[in-house]
Image (cartoon, rainbow, N blue to C red; front, side):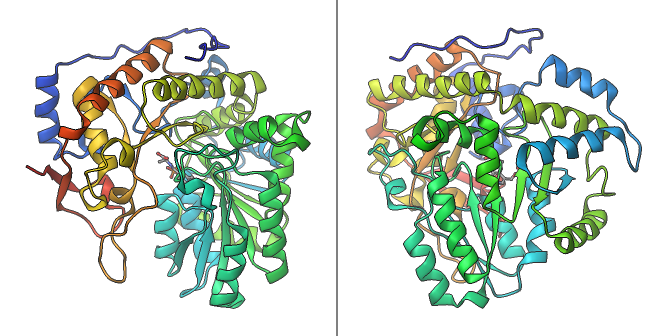
Length: 459
Ligand code: F0G
């Protein structure tokens, strides 16, 4: 197993967590209708449901909370955040919003016309939903390497560039509202996207005059991957790589709850289009609040401005990456199949490999999530057919390219021993995998169903 890299921080404040018994967890699961989002946080031992907003802020960020400027308009913290955004991304316009999906809700209806398609290396579920809510149709166009979890590739998050151009020609340029590059590619396993690929996609976007938007939730982890794996950038600083990545796009939407290491926040960035920014400001005032707070309090703006810099610190990113590698190598040594390599924010366990006897419509990824909770009180989430849901036109269950249980690791929160507990739990489940059965949905809402659906085990 890989050596664990010591943390480049020490612990100043702790939060006790509760251990419970297998019997208790069986009851909690039943009460939660076998939906991970229905479990109470206090009934979870290691919470890997998401790395979003679950990060530990630093002493500097917490001191920022105390000096946040709560002025309704023109607060100091707003200007500090805009300065940080302009400096790191090289974009002229930075608009705070309360989280990533708020940015999508504001931007997408402005840039998309009803009936258009939007093409991405892979949409995250809320991003997909906001394309649909804007009257558009989301299309995924990830590279083929991503679809084979067992085989390592450096940049499994990349767009399939040939297919992208084919889709544009098939639908007609005027029917493509935008191209979205998700960095890292969360739905494919937190996988890296190369600058080479961003350049190629940008060239196509330019050729056909289509807006290129970056979904920037995990931009810093993506930049670190580029430094490690793309020879041209091995001597570049993280900030230089970030500048380069963003220079090829027109705009970005960002959930700051990931790489900016805060508990709430989001950004919209616009490179230079003042007219577009004007429209964004208008919509933002209606939905999010005045331009200079965008649905956040001044203290949130302040800690976000600080977190943007902490999230791009190379020492921190090195440790973050090493933590994922430790977990991934421990699992692979135990024969647990994962999307190889580890993602930037977690390890995606291949539930198809774990449960080859469970078909996609009985949700192998979700099944593994339930087993992990039963086994060790570890909460994770499905990135597979259960998350993908039904085709909005036919109502039929869509088969996902993958069936993953995602071990999303919050930033600066868990230690080596927690990683060991996760490895042991999965090793245990693997031994009894053939006896495990799938799940059926009893009730589901029409959109983003995995957050609310009720399920039951198949007998
Ligand atoms: N884009 C990506 C790639 C995401 O992963 C997320 C959120 C969003 C957009 C939306 O951001 O939650 O701030 O509104 N991902 C979280 C996750 C929820 O668990 O992966 P948000």
